[in-house]
Image (cartoon, rainbow, N blue to C red):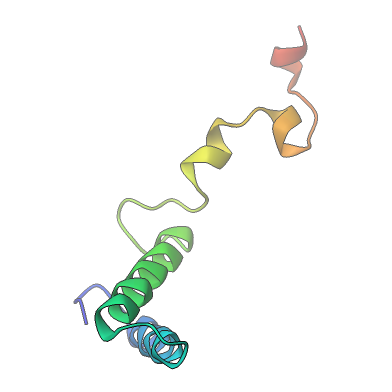
Length: 76
C-alpha cells in the first residue's frame, strides 16, 4: 500500500483485485487494474496533490458540448 492511500482506498484496492482475479485475470493484471482504479478515484475525489476533480477533457469542453448555455462573453 502506498503511503498516500488511506485505509479506505486500501480496502477498495483489495476488493477490486479480488474481483478481477475471480473474473479470470492474472494476478499481475488484477494488481494493475486495482491500482489504476484506486488512483483514478483519488484524483476525481481531490485526494491527490495534482488532482482537482473531474477530467481535463471536461474543463476544455465548450458549454454547448456540456449541454449548457454559452456564457455571456461567448455570445457577444
